[in-house]
Image 1 (cartoon, rainbow, N blue to C red):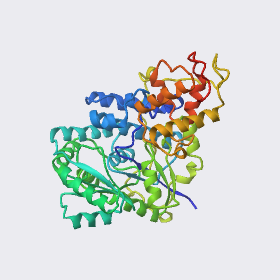
Image 2 (cartoon, one colour):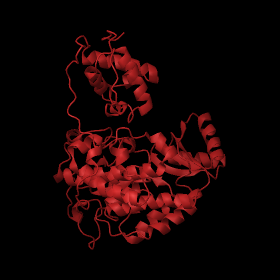
Image 3 (cartoon, rainbow, N blue to C red):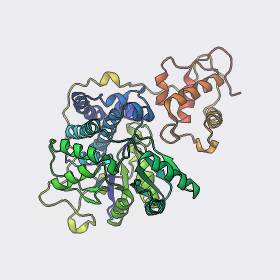
Image 4 (cartoon, one colour):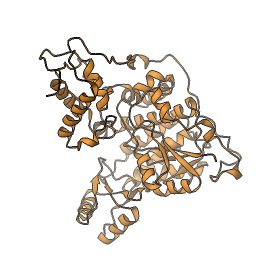
Length: 470
């Protein structure tokens, strides 16, 4: 039996600084894809997204949300388009259906071929321009640890008509949005009945009627962009249906900011129609976790859950052979195929190749030396170093030690920002009597305890004679 595969495209939280830095070393397609997207972003008055995706000194997610949301959006779009091309062109995977979550629906439109990549970047920019032209009232969003139907019943019971469902993420997790004061009352009520309620770090009430004016302006701007027929089957969690014609694209653009994302329903529907593998086409693994919570036991793949190189990406895709995802005749597929007038699903449009101005910005280090640095003959073995780091980091972060596994990504999995990572590593270097690298940005390449232990072993001694954990 042929496995059906869905590519899922995440939204605003799917950002990791320098997430493509290691991949760019191994995969020329990374720079080839970023080059025209950089040029388009700069032409439209934005920063080149490669700065955030390749530079190891790139700011953290929280900083971008507060200070440069437009740059965050172009970076999200570019990262997901790079991964889509790697999956479809480099690894020859052909998804049976594409599914986006919130902002990810705009990326999915582009990946499906409705927009060329540079037009997709212009679409993302038009969205931010609409916010600038029609700034909405301040609002917020609240993640609730309960099902969407229970949350809606809670809102009705409280009489909080200004707060509405924004995202149905999984059977036990949803998001509501609205003005700040009513959201505060909902948060207190949820706490009183023992329901976890976490405010999201956003300035506006996304997926709420408060953004109606922005949505109207965005729709007007989007009509100026060239849109064509989808070349991949695309399902919208906002519209609750296929997107396969011009009218559906216009509906999605208009609804994108004001209607809720019904991700749970979309995942259940696709699974019922035969999808057995969900591949997250973006950084982190947030949607993969939601899919698993919605359909326990289904296979999920999150290739960029943490920063990886080419060999690691290939390993994460093991078992997903190209033959597993080739299109079949309509009668053999439980998922409706594209209309007869639409061309058969090809790979993503090729982007032009030119001498790369990015090459000088991509650090291409050789493998880290595993030997003991000069003057550090007594340095402990790697296992004991990892054990000491686990104890030190757990105490500083307030985590149980067992949470800090050898390969847990400090930022992607544990939410430790780059500033805190630098502070903790400085403590570790002092503990082991090592001298810190002169280039502090180098630390962002080492995101796990095992990687940090390897880095410590290569650093020169600081002359204190301390070579073992205290």
